[in-house]
Image 1 (tube, rainbow, N blue to C red):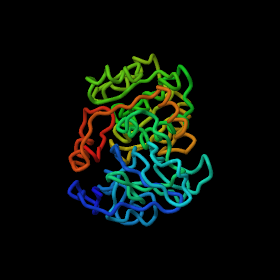
Image 2 (cartoon, rainbow, N blue to C red):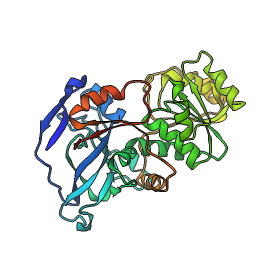
Image 3 (cartoon, rainbow, N blue to C red):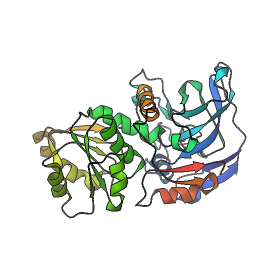
Length: 346
């Protein structure tokens, strides 16, 4: 099969197009023909060494073992079942829950033995992938490209919303609103929970698209008076912040949060380290949440919301698998909205 593998830490020249043997499903596994695989920051940061290099560079203490086929947002068709797997799954169109773990239900995302597809297992930048049958779920939408837009970013966004327990009528500020997680944070907060959403982006030319997704107001982080803009359009402080940016908007987020507000972060594309005056934290009674991925039950609830039309895929662009390097470069550019998807058969 054709595949794209990462050969080590570095730039996109560490992505290599190769021919690999089609993997065989083991007990209770299935073989999936990959039809679409969306790109996430996760595999780019893994390649770049943002999680560290050597040991502890992935989800496991031993670090990522190269070469590795990345890719975790996978949609495809089951073409072979291993021993113990239900043969009725053959021919099903599925999306993949993106990690394994022995953690109890509701806590599997924080289990010490969590292992991520595309990091600890070979992933979806390939024509075929094997995965546990129990972690394959019916595709929520009619097309592979649209269905591949949700697994990692959608699960992350869904878990963030459940953590802070958004209430109808509350105001939620969403940073990085044009990205994969951010655009889903906008939809989930507004369409599922009934919140008012202040979407923060760089390019306000995306305003109409973000309002279509459910944003009440769209503001640019480039404003010299962003905190004042937020307080003005909302008529006062916001109830919570869903953040994927980190340092660049951290001070503003704390400034506009109400007393008793909630701050949930799942990414740090705008800086991984920051300064915190603890007095702000305790005098305003702010609750912090760190968040990444989520649980299998949350994944199921998200898929139901997608099937019911409450969440819609936001696809910026597709690329053939052979242009994975070009796709990752494009993914990091400002001004796009939604997901970038690789198509092995294009």
